[in-house]
Length: 213
Image (tube, rainbow, N blue to C red; front, side, top):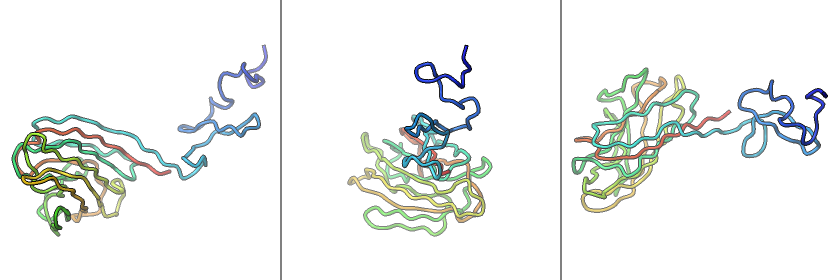
């Protein structure tokens, strides 16, 4: 019987070198009957590639708040909040961040701005605001995309940007804004969402981790 390394064509059932290939690599053929094991990005080069993976999904119903963990090795943490609605009318949607599993809620831990029919700014607050004065009427949903930058980094100011829309008591409005952690520059490992009063009546969320290598 011939050696496995000598097999060719249809007799070869896996790329040569599979047993010793590094993790997260693929076999890249060179068109000349051979190839190499490499990490591949969208430009088919072996360096500076980008990984995006879904790390959490969930459906929320009548909850005071809900938390999402941020994984390690994450350059951007992205969250989609779909059809989120408060149980109490004219409530503000808030977010907090955790460090070592403890959520920060000091009176001047965060700074934020929200643009919705005119800007609103707070230079020091115990929350990050995502939307203001959202209606609790049936079908008065909000949908938001939120990105947190370099959450795992040490000695780096933690910032976020968001955009979306929500229905308030009189109209449907586009919202956009941003915020940062001003308490310190330590890594963060979780996010919490809640309204300024009452429960989260309903929401579906998707969280993704983006990593550059």
